[in-house]
Length: 263
Length: 161
Image 1 (cartoon, rainbow over the protein chains, first blue to last red):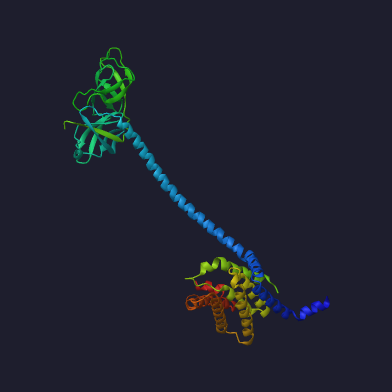
Image 2: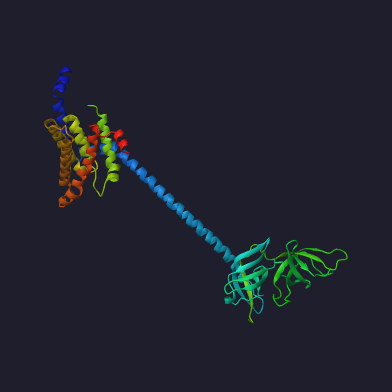
């Protein structure tokens, strides 16, 4: 063994160069076996970890891009869903209105509320149509649940509606069943009530109050309110009747102005 | 022969070939890190070490294109031996002489590989890739030599700012 190490030691440089040249020729000549083997070893040991790292980073970047895109898409979809939900609600309201028949000799002009004026209760609403759409003062305004008020002021492209909850607005009404006349009023302290009803008048809780048609502003038969409670003390001349409007004036949105055919 | 530093150089070369080469390329001009490493090893280590490192570098670079593997091994091996022999016979104390040697052999490597690869557009390749690539790589070699000579230190860089 000693002579082997002596030979290796003395010829170390020659053996080193010789082996290198041998390896070079081996790789050059054996192109289908040795060369791919060294290529694979080099790829697996040196290039592969970095290629994996590169792929991983590229994957993360791709995921981040996709995440950003999906978030944007989610926001857009949410907005579309909101718009669709709103369109569905409007569609439902309009479908319900299709079953609504305007009173005889009247035609219906749909309007939208631009703003609502409130003093504890809503008292007036500005609508998006005016005299250029044939709107005029004192035309009745309704929605699918019943009477809302009347047109009070008119401008070319806007109009103001005086709501039933305005204390200065009084509507001649009658009990739908018993046909008793009275006046529907509203006060912020008492709410809506039925005034001028004799103490012996036949009226019960749950009865429907409709417009009487007297006074020339509102056509007869429009729903105004439901009787909430009735009170008559002994010796009173008039009954005290509290009403609940058929229209929730806090939720009004689409309204319809009734325009007389004679106009 | 302690192989750990050379193994790290090979891993640096692998990192460059897979990731850094694309990141640092300017208009398709890339750093020829394999040739730069082989030349620097040949300048400061023995010819046997330089030859083996050149062969290993040739295998790593050639594993991306197997048909080029023997050429890369041959050219890098020749450069390693030639650099070592030149550095022993010439006065390479000055930075300029080492830069000239570095630039010359980087250009030689670029030319040789381009001749193997190219068919008819050798001139275009020479002007658009080989010469700019040599200059680009030489810039890094110059920085390395400055650092090795102690002309470029962290304290001096910090003093600049």
